[in-house]
Image (cartoon, rainbow, N blue to C red; front, top):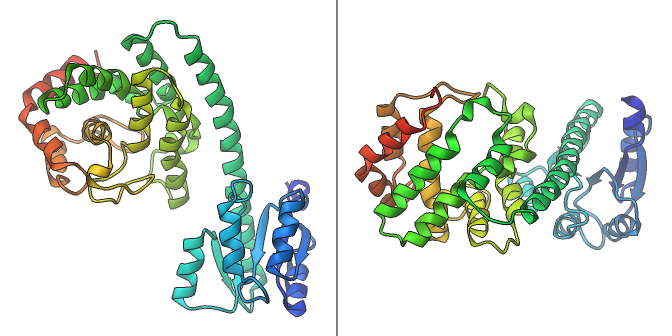
Length: 351
């Protein structure tokens, strides 16, 4: 492990020679170091070739400051994934908020503590490695799934169920989840007066809502306890992964599946993910699937929870009317409560 760490490269961006010497003294035994004494030099070094694995960035420098350097790095697709840690004497809450808003992963105040610097770097190097491995796996699996889609001659509901199950095969507790929630979604769509064509598209597309979970590590997807903040951030990526897998299809309901995969975790009040959409900014299909998906998650066993009783599950849906869920869709859901229960019984996991 030490051999691997020693090959990692850290770019120190600092105009004060004494501060540079301090950081070099802390890090030179474990990392390969590059030095830039201005923001302009830092951007040139990153653009010239081999990108560093992490950047320690001062804020107050001649020319462009650290905030501007960070902003430019995060705007460039080629460099936005490089972890940036601000190392600065600026210690106000406003300065820290500005740094995190620009995309830095941490904020270390000068004068620095050597153990703090080493541990923070170790933590973010580990997360960076996990993200890179995840991206490689996602790229491989995305290509595999796209190749599978190209070979489909005739689309059918059975085919889509099989492909959707591929994303959930590791989670034994999901059982008949895709059958239940897709039928819940179609029943809600009928109640809302949507056309037969749209209802059918929702029935076909809904099972693909979690196809992006194929790119989530088992250690997170199957974790029996509560996810950490970092783990939850990785879990949230399944919406983007799913949309990426399904993008650019010529088949209408697969295009709808892309929309659903991307938006089924958006909240009516804007507190959802991945884009923080609110109210009717969220596509109708995504709002419908959100209710159906959460209801099924509440009423079934998952790695992190036992099933809630029906009355508790219904109450949670009602309590989130106008918060997490579109009020009209919640009203439609409750108006067909008997049908929802019939669907649940038909696709019970123990049958």
